Length: 164
Image (cartoon, rainbow, N blue to C red; front, side, top):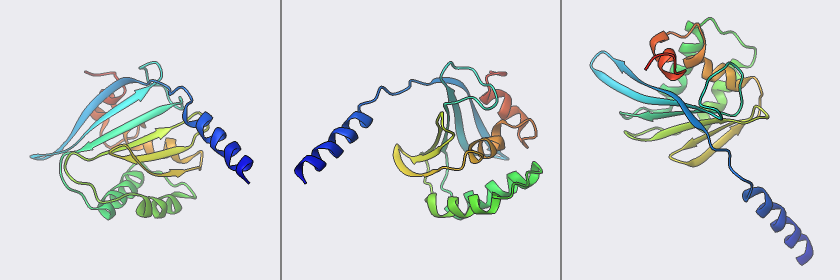
């Protein structure tokens, strides 16, 4: 039993000691609605450039006001609808997000990391919230900001480094 525990510990240590990938900022943007600043967003990639489908990719959103979890999930669905997205697992993803995302407070940062295996990992203020293994989720979710059909084209240009 002690040998098994030692082997598991060594396996865990080798995984956690792996060299992290350093990502470079591609761009950043602030979302303002009328008089309110809602969030600051930043996009990161391995080379500091954006191209569709590249991995790893990271999207950080720092909220500038308090927002309830259910409002975040609802807005995600509304954005997908506005873009005409109709994925067969879209409702399942929203259900998972409803369980995964907490309410956010002013200055909280939600981060999405999409790795080379197309796993989508969410964090709040650096603490793990959960992982969505579906390889199609990452592009669908980041498409809210990065798709050519986004409802916020100026924000997309700034995030993708096409406009400073």
